[in-house]
Length: 439
Image 1 (cartoon, helix red, strand yellow):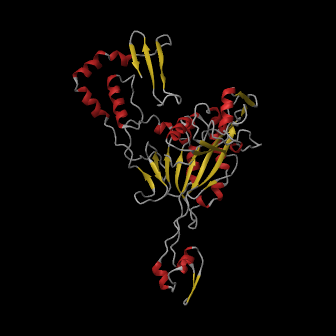
Image 2 (cartoon, rainbow, N blue to C red):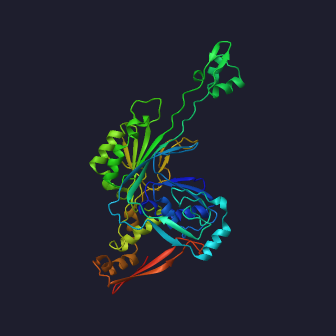
Image 3 (tube, rainbow, N blue to C red):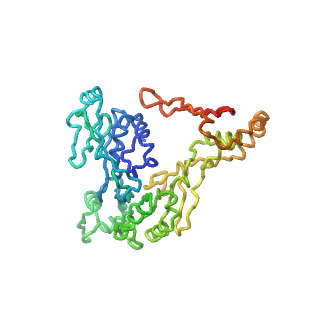
């Protein structure tokens, strides 16, 4: 986890970024000191609004909002964003900025823990400020007043084209020697792409170096609405880039397409027509990840077993959770000519070949399927549990309630500060005349 350096977000919607603050705390607790976040407009406002929850002095965040065709590139990957913006249908106009007054004691602490070199002002966006306390770019550490920009009236989503670097071809020593190349500096020149002169004539690198292995291309698509899809169709990247052409042996082609679009968009015929017309190669593998296909999955076998047991005792109160029977392999879900799979928890996508893992989908860590019938049959054989189920059968027959019929007591939660442990919480649901349930 500490090897993570960059996170690319597709949307600033709660379903996409709700776990980001807690994840940042986990990374900080694991010893990470620098994290780069990239995404659509609104990312800085979200991180700024979360600054009082994510209080880890050692972790510094660098934020980048995509507004155009700028890309990210390092030695391992090139990421090209495709920004889709449409008017937000539920937007309510609000003032141009939120005025926020930092408490005096906190402002003094920020001044003491920061230096002028922490600040890199941006006139176009006043919240683009790098700092280490209180962990965010969204507020200057040397001023007591800060303003966050008002939410945009545009609904923005980012799709990504991810290109892995090409792997250089292997140098064939036997071919080089046969062509009269001498061992030593001439070998080095050829590997650098420089022709060498031999008694037999000029030897060019391609004569003794195998062709490079073209890097994979992975496309991530997130269209939260049909309006976003229409904007995506108008983008000329798909028609001009060699990645999407059928016959371009000199260029890498798309190998995987990750669909994060909601299920009602994925099932729309217009979306499917776009996928079929854009990704024509039959070798492309499609992976679909949305709530309808993957929602409410349980990661751990022990937790899945407990849910199966509770379902036996009170099926209506503890229904079967979608995904309780984890898939041993991804199952096809679409009827495209290409292979299509439903994403499942712990499914991995290897983009580079290693000594132990090939390129492609890795299902080795997906837990084996839980046999719910077997678990419940074992409970049925226990007389005490069988009698308890019969005695409390009315719990599964409870119907609609009014708000006067039940009470929910929040028993507290382990917060980021000052508690040592986080994410531990409890709720007590009391149903009048029927008892209660500790959750």
